[in-house]
Length: 366
Image 1 (cartoon, rainbow, N blue to C red):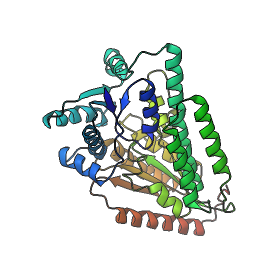
Image 2 (cartoon, one colour):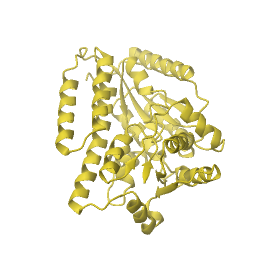
Image 3 (cartoon, one colour):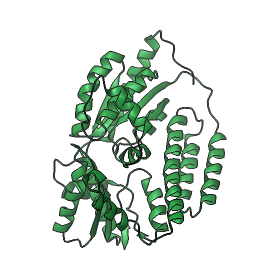
């Protein structure tokens, strides 16, 4: 079996370790490029979600590299993510590809298919203790890649040498791709943290603070959202992203829950009481949390025509008025242009700076 999976930021680092440790040959999808997007756009239905098109492009590029088994997760509720795998499977069959499609769906749709999918993804049989250690280390790798990205977006506005910051973060992530033991992981983690702590920073000052909310794929995958986080950081803005694969997984698994998401859902209740699919409620709750924490603005990232986020956008209009919080809505699809997005983000930051200059409110110095 030569297995592959679609990209989602650095998820390939953790999954690559996990599947390789389980004895599965991994075919890594090539980095997302214009070619990847063009393949998905050409083959997918025109009105399909943009993430479906990009991940379809991942699959086809991986198949051309030799992959014969595709691992894909399923979704829950009115979000169309639940249909991705079915549509992609039909498209690949119509194209004549002879591949095995393994769908890990939510157990609410049946424990037997859920366990069968886990079994198909587990490769060789390991002892319970070794399996636990392997899954635990893969989880730590995933968490640490997210921690590294959190530090990148938090420090970019203050670090003297931004290229050095990128080299430290990207270098650590690359080294994680070859981790083979817990001790090696801890050494890489320690050395990365030492290198980050050694970075020269500008003195603390009153900086703009912007939070990011939105759909789990577009809000994280910098190769399709034109790296909004970097753009904001280069403009001198402190950035925090509320969207996390770790929290998504915790909230999806049957025996765990994400405290972050539960808190966001609680905050969203006065405005949105019903689950609308995807991260709709999270976007509303996280925006309110940013407002209460004194952030200067919020960027809302989502795929064009994403129903849950369109609902969230309509609700956020009232949140924006109640909390006097500027919100920039960015719908992304294959027709989005980088120049137009940069212009909108720069204009948004200009507005935030002007508001801050005119405001008599005290802004926290961090």
